[in-house]
Amino acid sequence: MKKLLIVLSIVSLFIVHISCEKERLEDDATDQQETQDTLGNQEGNIAPDFTSRDQDSTLKSLSDFKGKYVYLEFWAAWCSPCRSENVHTLATYRKFKDENFTILQVSYDKTKEAWLTGIEEDTLGAWHHMSDVNYWDTETQSLYNVRAIPYGFLISPEGKILKRDIRYPQLDSVLTDIFNSTTLH
Image 1: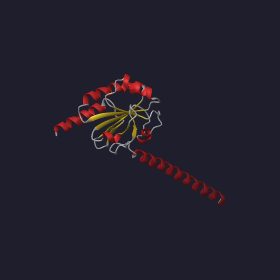
Image 2: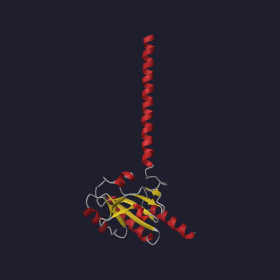
Image 3: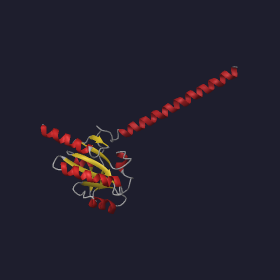
Image 4: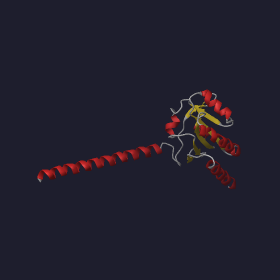
C-alpha cells in the first residue's frame, strides 16, 4: 500500500509538472504572438518604416509619405487575386487622388521584369511602387507579418495604422468617411 501511495504521488507530481510545462509553453506562444503583433501590424500602432527600391532603383522609405493617408498594399504580378484587386485599387486612386492620399504598392515578385510588366499591364503607374524582387524574403514580410497577398494597410498622415487587411470596398468606404469628415471641419 505504501509503495502504491509513493507511485501515485510521483505520477501526480509528474502530471502537475506536465500541466505546468504545457501552460508555460502556451503562455510563451501567446507572449510571442503579442510581441509580433506589436511590431507594427496592429491597428493603432505606428507603421514600421522600411526602405526599398522603386521602379527606377531609387531608394525610398515609407516615411517619405508621412503627412498623407497611405494605402500600403502588398502584391505580386504572379498573384491572380492581386491582379483582380488592382482594378479596384486603380478606381480608388482615381476617386481620391486629389485628396491627401497616395498608394504605395510593395511587390513580392521574383524579377524586376515581372514586377514592371504587372505595373504596366494593370496601368498602375500613377502611384508609388517598391520591391526588393526577392519574392517573400523581404523586410516588409516580417515587419508587417504578411502571410498572404493581396494584403493592405491604411496608414494615417501621422504614420499610424488605421486599418489592416483592408481592400475594396471597405477601403473606399473608409476613405469616403475620412475625407467627408475632414471637409466638414
